[in-house]
Length: 149
Image (cartoon, rainbow, N blue to C red; front, top):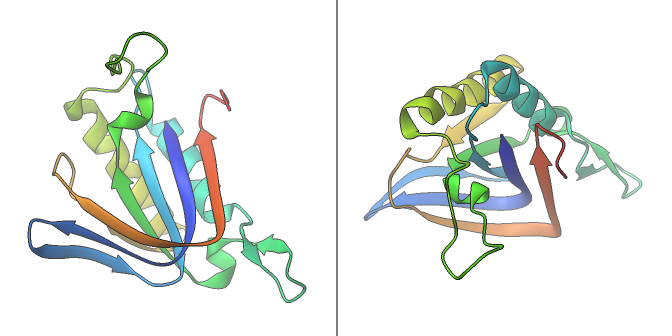
């Protein structure tokens, strides 16, 4: 599984004319499931997201996690994180999981983050979404459960 994490002061997700998710201070996680990913990957990713120290402590050092600050998490599916654009002009998405495999693993990420005590909102799987955010810092990190980066 892959994720792009952005520390935000606010984020919203819209589908059509409807705002389906909104958070204040916290993390926006764009998450993709790869072929061969497992429930173990989903748990590992959720734990990493909520425990990663990306928030400033009283000394201005990034030393606090989402759980420690009480911030919110927005999880938005984004299979294009598995897009391979090394050849040609059209990205290849063959390494992304099929929707029937991806949806339960995304739900597992959300469930694990909630189990750990995080407030979580989500986008809508397979919907055309508009995601708005104010990136604080800016802080943006790449995660991959296979430790590719």
